[in-house]
Length: 253
Image (cartoon, rainbow, N blue to C red):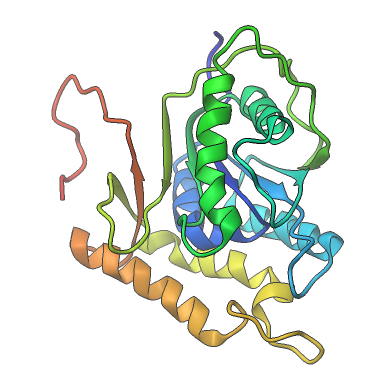
């Protein structure tokens, strides 16, 4: 297998989910010179507010704010993410093989929404299939930012190093990223999703366009930050463990 083309790929079910769950970490890593990609599995067509076209325009704007190397959007059915659907597994496998990331992270935390619960399972299965030489998915349908889809062959196997998901409050994280310096960028990226977070005239009231929602996002980050002894942090959990040859340079919390 060839060298990784990306350092991290964040796979989320809907536009804005990557930003909600991990936006500050994505910007933090981009600021460190890492090649960070995002992939929305669906167009968010069942959302109470905003059309798929509006949401894609907002997603592109947010991607630029976060300094992403690229963003993809598949056309899996909103509300019906299914880790056992061969077509959905094939499309996600193709994305992993085209982007070729070292790490994959799913966001937001796997709670409440059925798509949020199903996405980590779908991604884990697709990452396994991406390793198998006899699996040969077609190029999936979808959109790409800032230009075309990554070049390459979706039939070429790829093995990523680790798979994580955003850690829900109350669970034990595997690792924490201090994101204090990137928090403003996260809030700016979320503000790009005007159709989702602005309770403007003509918009239907929802959980996420209530001001309390973004306040809760910050409370979660402050909770993880308190645990780590910093102001703000985002947390991941997964089965992978680092292989070390020395004590790491970063502080252990």
